[in-house]
Amino acid sequence: MKLQWLGTAGFKVETGDQLFLIDPYLSRNEKARPVQTMQPQELSGEGQIFITHGHFDHLYDVPAIMAQGKSTVYCSETAAETLVREGADSSRITAVGVDGYAADFGGYKAEAFFSRHVKFDIPLVARTLWRVGLSYGRLSAIGRSYPAGQVLSWRFTIDGYTMHHFGSGGSTPEELQRLAARPIDLLLVPLQGHTHICDIVLEYVRVLKPRLVIPHHQDDFYPPISTYVDIAPFVAQVKEKCPDTEVRVMDFNEVISL
Image (cartoon, rainbow, N blue to C red):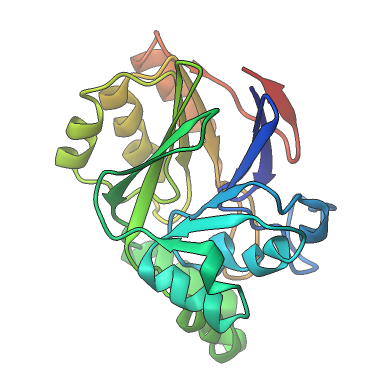
């Protein structure tokens, strides 16, 4: 299995002769860092696309990717409505409305679990508003156009290897405990959206006990809405408090084999 980080919460997964995408968002403005040189048209539109929630930095490029082929999308009802509004083919979209939804694609199995978006804390909101300044009206319109809807986390089982992806860090303790009932090999966790996000996501690692954890979403994907998140404290805490878990920090568009 090959895993490629596309920036933000986006990943491309190849296994055998199959591929699928998770939250594939490539579009950036001129101030975004790191620079993403890949374009949505470069991603194959033949596999499945799994969406965690409907915010623009998870959903925006999906219609362009779908236009490259016959890919099918699995997302919440809210995200499905947004995609159709943006011109996507509704017949190729499955709206997931059931907690624990599962689908078998032959080479792998995908399961969706109801989750929650991280709650933006007051200090983070204040810093963001200060950065945005006079651009607030234009930039807030982007957020209103792409509502989150029901947040999903996705678990993939590939040849006995289990990978779990979160697109936001708002999971309740009860949710994490339920997911921990079955062990996972790889945990993909987002570090964005809260002043103390490193501490919040450390709890994911502590409860789920993966063999490997890969942080994502720490990039400055759309300034001034976003800012780069220093994930060094998270990496250090995992090494100290979860010594049985390996941490791998990936570079933009890097491909690793698992």
